Image (cartoon, rainbow, N blue to C red):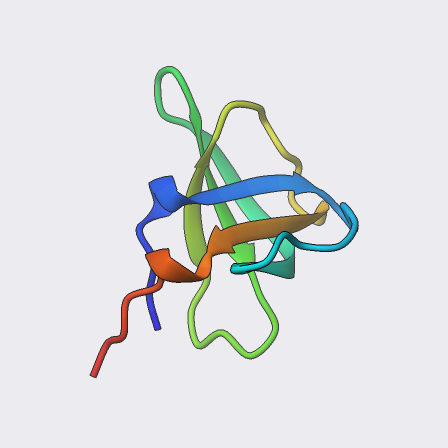
Length: 79
């Protein structure tokens, strides 16, 4: 499965019960780079084969635990 970065939101760890139709996954920030107006955040997720690279409005330090949220309808099946 895949998802476009702009369809994923990053929040603090454990933000409560997800809304129906959304996935909430725990992740750890591995890198953060300013890209001019936003930050490119690399996150490791359990069972993911590669880091997720997402956009975020604020700087996050490597090692920070976050929650990523995505609507199930935004998931793309990659075969």
